Length: 60
Length: 147
Image (cartoon, rainbow over all chains, first blue to last red; front, top):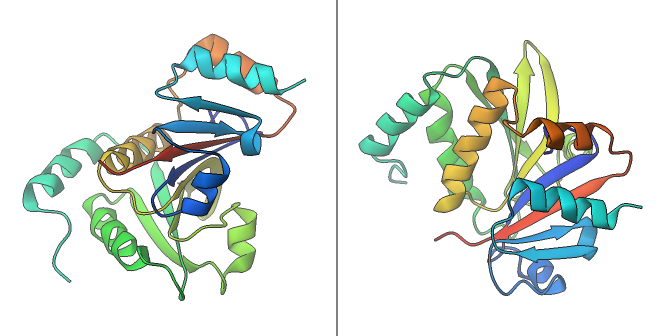
């Protein structure tokens, strides 16, 4: 998705190496996708259409 | 330090990278103090890069190269940016890794390299249309563990 839009940045974060950040977003199960610094959190694999739906929810 | 990639994995990567059409830049950001996994992560990329002549690796330091880190939105070490490389021009696709890409993340890294090499996201047309019309920044952080 990051490839298709300059507005989108995607970052894979190794939870074990960045514990502070993981705790900030209450990461308990992986993968967890956190959108815009906690505007939404999705645990588990996220199919493409679901991710689109999640992004739609957090933008006005 | 011993090799991280064994001969089998190296051979698999040679096969995976063979179809690469365009060049890909791996930007690696290290940090001198308190970075437990920087040395291993750097060594891993240094072993991956020579496997394809379409792959390029440049090593940066998060502090010494703060301007580059800021330009590519890197704030963690080890940090990796997978960018498109056309001649001397780098195109940022917004793809980053924070932490050593081991286990599943290693496969994900290789997949990202291949996507950037084909300059195509493989996403559905309706997803592309939606993303093209985005006017607000979206940061997707995927927390993972290496198993």
